[in-house]
Length: 82
Image 1 (tube, rainbow, N blue to C red):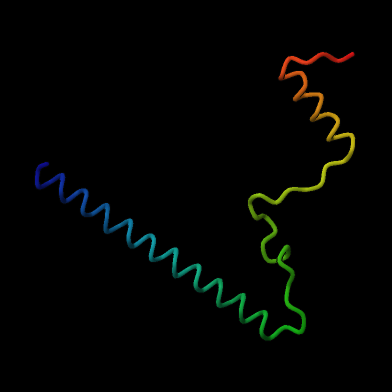
Image 2 (image 1 turned 120 degrees about the vertical axis):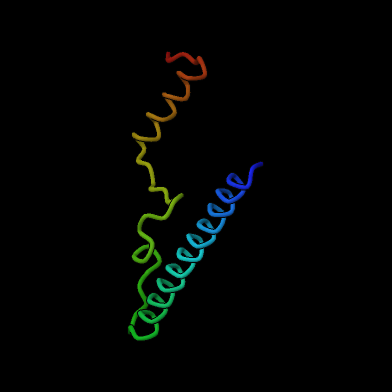
């Protein structure tokens, strides 16, 4: 590794640390704002109101949607529909 390549890696590492620090500060600020809202509000906001788009949130399927999903899986596995 040449000195120029080492400097590029070092600069990239420093930039990554600065980016992580900025993201941490943003999270801390958001948490402080949320805590402030919960402390001064009569009723704290619901979890779903605060995090409406959380990953892994699944809505309930209707019976028709569930049946359609079963039919798709059955066809994918080579099953027949009689």
